[in-house]
Length: 392
Image (cartoon, rainbow, N blue to C red; front, side, top):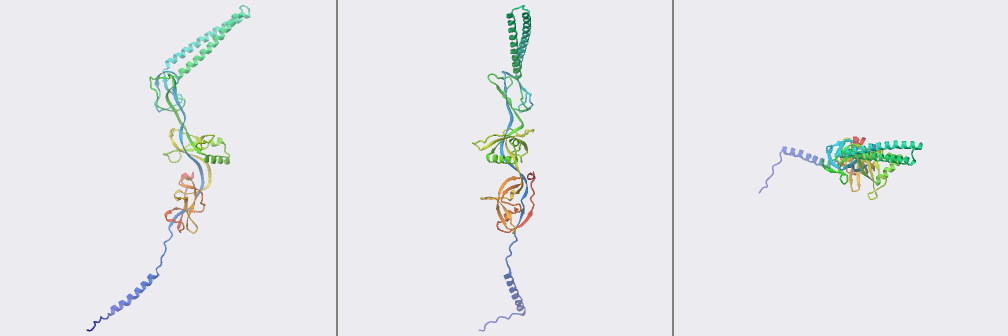
């Protein structure tokens, strides 16, 4: 059999093949020349540390306490006649709060006053008789014994008058006790005895309690290290113990922002409590609106010293690991470096850096997840402004 012959390509097919082969070679050559282009360094925000003067505070927690509190008691026996205030109301010094059966004590006072008047009359008569007898003795009209008797009568009358005057004062005091008055401006608690009740029978009966709220005490404790630091700063500044007692204090409630209540340091204990290692201290805070009540748990801070040119960075720029706190710093070659730092107190939105950072260091403030230590970044310099609280 004869083999079948393939048809010869046409002119069009030969031209197409001539075009396709060079194109394929050109494409293969182009693929071989492609190379990997690394992505640009990630952009991160950096800022220089803020430099300004800060105030260092001693911070503590404490409790409020009334500056004055007194239990109101019945100092005389009798039936409670009236209650002359509303429970829990504010009263002024001298206001009558309770009245205890005054009529009996008024009569006793009048009785004592009458006895005093009688003693005065007796003394007047005895004194006149003494003068008369003394004149007669001088003229030798009566004996000396008669004058001695007259002198004794006069002295007894004088003693009786003094006793009557004392009795009058006692009766007057007891009559005054029938009205229980406010010893100072303050809030009076609910009454503890009812009208018609017999009070002051065997011992003084408590009727209520009055509490002064303006100003108010703030009690707190200072640990031994802070005491040493404060005393060292006081010696450096030449402050005396009297100067320390006039230091301002700032107080804030748990529900308040910051420390809105201002006062002064009033007292510091002379010794350290050995069982707790703390020093008891107390401040006095004006409380005209009675916002602070005795027994509140409060936050306290006392300004100790001012530090110029302190370095501060945004608190959000700080990280932490097992070795402590750190910040990410961009070097001159735009490499990220992890820098260990010692931190201080928070001042507004900024954190004080005690050590580990320089004023010219560029600290990463945003894009922290893109900043990997040892790798390059594209730093975008930003300016950090102190917050209003930090600028004070």
